[in-house]
Amino acid sequence: MSAVSLLIAAFMLALLNAGQAQAAGPAYVALGDSYSSGNGAGNYIDSSGDCHRSNSAYPALYAAAHSPSSFTFAACSGAVTSDVTGSQLGGLNSSTGLVTITIGGNDAGFADVMTTCVAGSDSTCLNRVATARTFISNTLPARLDSVYNAISSRAPNAHVVVLGYPHMYIEPSWWCLGIGETKREAINDAADLLNSVISARAAAHGFAYGDVAAAFSGHELCSGDDWLHDLALPVWESYHPTARGHSGGYLVALNARD
Image (cartoon, rainbow, N blue to C red; front, side, top):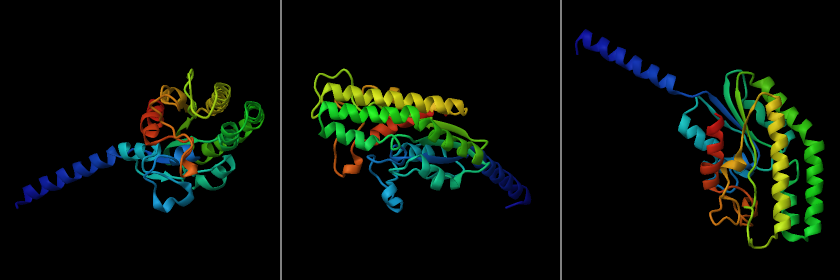
C-alpha cells in the first residue's frame, strides 16, 4: 500500500471514529422504584437481585435505542424517596445529560392500598385510599422536593424527566373480576392525585413530566388489552406494567418529553 493510500485510510478511519463518538447520546441515569426497574416486564438482569431490573424496562429500552455515552440503571423495586437520595444518586455528576425517575407510589403505600382494596370491603378500601390521599397531599410534596433538589445538585446539566403512574383500571367498565366500580374509581382517583402532585413538584424544579396515564389509556386492567398485571405469581409482579406497558406506555411517555 502506498503512502497516499495509507493516509487516505487513516483519514477515513478518523472520520468514522469521530462519527461514532458524535453518535453517542448523553450519559443517562435511571432512578426510581419498581415502575422504572421493570417489575412485571420479565427478562430480568440476574445481577440486579431483589431490585428486579429488567432489560425490557423502559430505561433499558431507551438506552438500547439511543446509545448513551454511559447508562447507569439504579432504579430498584420497593424504593421510596429516601432510598433514592440514600443509595441511587452515585451515578450522577455534571456530565450527566439525562435522568429519568418514577418515585412516590411506595411512599404513599401503593402496595397496601391494592391489597386492602382487592381483599377488603368497599368501606375498608375507601378508608385506606383516604389515608393515602392525605399523605399524598400533605407529606409527599416535601419528600419529592428532597429528591428533586438532590438530583439538581448532583447533575446540574441534566435534562430530568419525571414519569407518573398509569390508572390501574379502565373506566368506565361494565365488569371487572374481583373488584367493584367503587373501589376502581377510588384507586384511579388516587392515582390522579398522585400524578398531579408529582407533576406540580417536577414543574417547580424545572423538570419535564411524562404523562404515563395518557400513554396507557385503553390498556388498563379490564380493558381486554391490558398492559398491567392483575394479581399474579410471583406476587411482586402484580399491578405492575408488562413488557408491552414499558415499550408502549412508559417509553412512549419518555420519548414525548425527551
